Amino acid sequence: MEDRDFNEIVRKYQKKIYYLCYRMVENEEDAKDLSQEVFVKVYLKLKDFKGKSSLFTWIYRIACNICINFTKKKKIKFEELKPETTADSANPEKDLQKKYLSIQIEKAINTLPPKQRAVFVMRNYENLQHKEIAEILGKSLGTVKSNYHQAVFKLRELLAPLSGVGNRHACSLQKRRSI
Amino acid sequence: MKCKKVKKRFVDYIEDELKDLEKKAIDDHLEACHKCSAELNGLRETIGLTKRVRVPRLSERFWINFLPNVREKIEEREQRKQLFSFKLVPAFVVSLSILFIISIFYFRNREPNIETVEFIESVIIENLVNEEIEKDAIEMEILLEEREIENKDISILIDEMEEEERTAFCKRLEKMLKRG
Figure 1 (cartoon, rainbow over the protein chains, first blue to last red):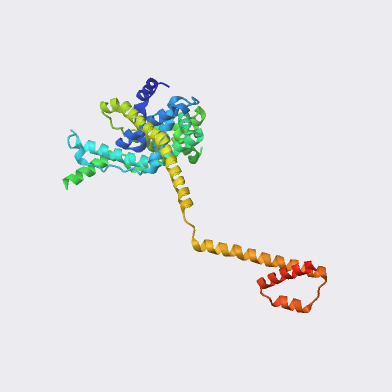
Figure 2 (cartoon, chains in turn red, yellow; figure 1 turned 30 degrees about the horizontal axis):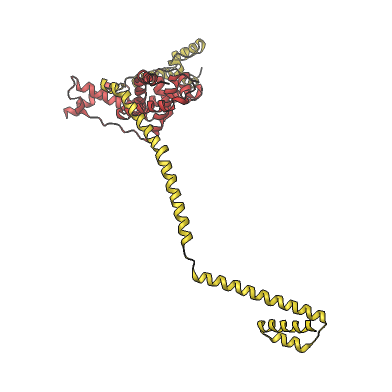
């Protein structure tokens, strides 16, 4: 494969792979590094690509494996809620509430085992079909569906207290400020 | 349809992956069972909630530099690989060979321990002397048997002799007997 072809592959998939990595590791810097690492591996392993699956599936498989290994090694830390980050915003209360929600959701997603998380991310955010996910992860369709099912139910359990959190959280913040 | 069975199909129901007949059965159950209906709404809400998390946007500069950065990493990786295969491995082999040659010279030129040499020499000599004495005695016995000599005095005398004396005596006796 010529260099021009490889450049084309990178340009075509760089954003998708970055988003996948970000969803998997929930950290911007790590996602930047990992997404580049994916393409380094793609380049080095390109001679082994037999074309049994599509190029897209193959690249996603490499990305998933890199992210799964990374999440196994590193326990992800979450940024603490920093009210000052929203100081310039027109509606700091609303932004703070959004940030709080995002962190809680990210935390909940990160409690999922790496493979379950990979399935959930690919289905929920990348909108891939279960069949495609099965091919990427090298698992059966049944296993992938079961993983997704378990992930959704676990998230429901963890995020149930956040239902309608918008109003409750805003109220509690107002109370704290008034004190 | 029972609640347990319905719950198992919730995700497929949300994703619209059920056949018409099964979907209808679940719809009927949901109309009658408020608990299942509430749970299904909860799951829908959760999925909706997770979709609210946005990936932070990266600068255009990052995307422009993405490919050059990947290229740079590839180059680094290949250089490291080359360094190992073309420089480090031969260096390792050469250093091992030098070590081997030095060790050969060291062990060759090393002087042997004098005490050990003396001990080995004494053992060898002792063995040789014993062998000779034994040999002489056997030969003497054979000669005496051949000549049918049965002299008690001689045997007593021989028994009392030291090994070396006995050898010398036997040789003389042999000569004597040969002479006749």
